[in-house]
Image (tube, rainbow, N blue to C red):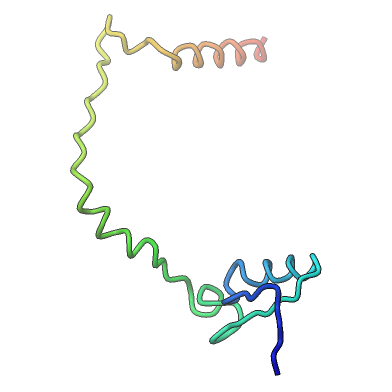
Length: 101
């Protein structure tokens, strides 16, 4: 006996059941195939981050130690007070002062 399907979903992990439901709702004849327990690895035994495990060795060969950050110059007369932070701080202080009056 031959059965024809419009789509065959392999695996019932995170996307499988939802995709099967959407395709079936659209009028497609759908088959779902799962070799073990419904829900896939994450639901039944805990996720194994295979993509992270595969990429780790590759990433470590491309990385290099970072330079330590330079300490901020807080000396009087330095440009430590320039930029967006003092502006944001003055707006916050002005806003708070208006509410205290």
